[in-house]
Image (cartoon, rainbow, N blue to C red; front, side, top):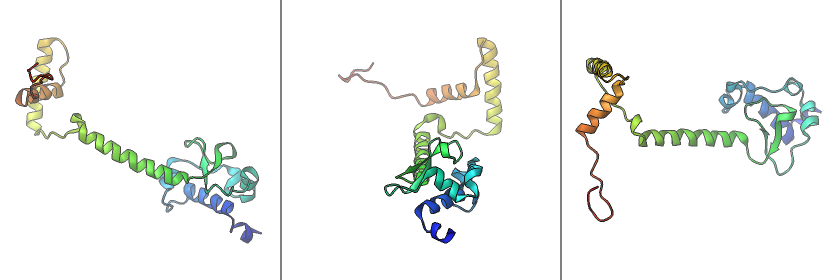
Length: 165
């Protein structure tokens, strides 16, 4: 019976679900077992329980997906899906990493500025002294920003007629 069942798409989905959660060599393990996602006890060792709860995989589907991606694989949290949730997550992971990298390149606060240790200590002392004079806390990065704005002023702004603002 197991040999016949192991050839079905549903049985293969059950095996893949377990591999996602328990096989550290499975390519997407970090998205499932690596995050603490597991298979409910009823399904873990019993493919018949899995099949009785989920039914056979419909022809128009090719994967088992979780409804809430933060919860385990169980009867109440699974559905058959037409798109592989693993592929969707990997694509989303890669896209979000790439988008984050692009944002860091455009965001001025992520531009690296290397300051030697003794210069940083000097700037911190200056920030403390200015804080005492002004009666409010001045952060060292505020002093650095001010110095950069003086050294590299923003270009002059012009209105639509070419006159300076």
